[in-house]
Length: 214
Length: 402
Ligand SMILES: Nc1nc2c(ncn2[C@@H]2O[C@H](COP(=O)(O)OP(=O)(O)OP(=O)(O)O)[C@@H](O)[C@H]2O)c(=O)[nH]1
Ligand SMILES: [Mg+2]
Image 1 (cartoon, rainbow over the protein chains, first blue to last red):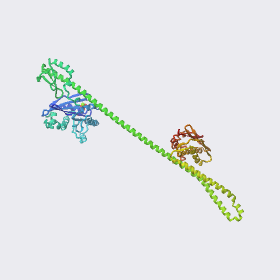
Image 2: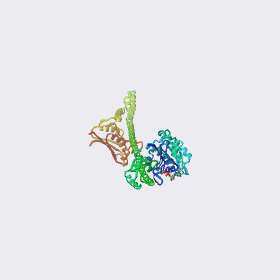
Image 3: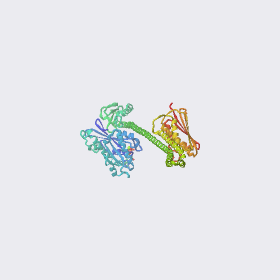
Image 4: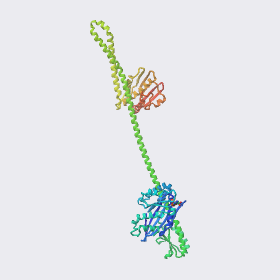
């Protein structure tokens, strides 16, 4: 949950999805692409053969006109089925989620199961899934047997979440996904945290601050 | 929760406990030429001595913000910066370890929780199976009940069948005397016509008497009347036996002498017997028995009828011997015939409904099975000793109250 500590406000954002869908790659590219006022190092906790065992963590931050420090801590969960306990623990206290799906036709079942596990785990760790800021990213658009865009859009047309197509490997759609999530997080928290009123932060400035385009 | 969470903002004093400070502090002091101070985020001193000058105080940043400061009044700037990098490297390793360890504990707790959830699901499905098993038991019971009902219906059907057979036998028996009584009466009518003719010829009485053969007619007339009277008596007796036999439906228990039952049935039976078959009774004195006499009559009738048919099937003259007597704990009744006997296979199946040794149509094949049900209802026993070609003995035992 967003945390106010002294003169700072911290958001926990989690990249969730099936194994090998490109969650870690998203964070790697964001680390390269973004230039906010404050940017920490990407911390990768234990990987084995390129697969996340615990989590990755990328800290970003900027100061609002009021002087309030806004911090974002981006986490990835391990996608492998076996690490469900860790996945749940990392998901705990999330303020927003990017669901990274794999566009590969053969991964459709894994995507569906992982999305199901996201909703189940949200319930178990006490997150209100219905009001959770969420962005759905279909990654690996560059794959030859990627499910066609029209088909994906048709299938997700009834869903309330922003849908972003990405090729994280080439850095495409990564910033867009993050920006979409920032917007949803702002909408959810702006009023309670008095972002616009007290801290002089409109939605666009909030997103721009985090991306470093201010 | 967030106090213990792996993703909390770790404080410097959590990452460097007293023992760690004890090791790192002196080493840094050595590097810095004497003086070192380690301060937390709020500027509180954790170790050593810190100068007031701001340029001698470097922030320790792991993510975005300083979680503490490293200070020295004696160190050259390059040494101070180098020492800061060293300390940050140590803190990074420390924070990785702390996060991993705490996350591990959280993950294990989550795994344990999901284990408990699947355990609960298992219990739930076990309960479901238990319920199912209970329902099955109830269904089996209700089906058993249905079977029993059907058995009861079969028994009723068999009862009707044997009552019908009895009625047919009775009709035949009653027809016999009725036949000769009818014929006697019509002969007697022609005799009376002769007496009427005599009236016109009374003048020649002597001759007419002779010509009309009235001496014979008188004698035969008396014979016919005696004969008819005995026929009527036989009909009356048959009807009386029939009445006592048809008590089957009076299902209340009575205190009865089984010998009386046997005598009734034997007398019904003997009226149907062909001349080549003898029925003999050797009845010993019996204590009275609380029983359903109607049902027992039915039972004795079935067994005796089987005996008679076994003799008929053998195609030779024979005898059915019915005996009764007291034995240890109760009453024993034997019904023995010297008829066709049963094979071993027939004996094994004898008590099954629908099993019959006779051709289809001659009997429903329910005789012995019904007999056994009646015996069991009286807490008795029935067994069969039989040798093919020699004969069969059915032994019935009824316990008497102590
Ligand atoms: N073709 C293609 N490959 C990609 C893309 N994004 C990531 N990958 C590759 O997919 C593999 C997995 O990427 P990761 O970012 O490690 O996946 P992850 O979701 O963190 O995987 P886990 O940590 O096991 O859950 C790597 O070999 C990436 O190079 C993409 O857009 N296109
Ligand atoms: Mg990963």
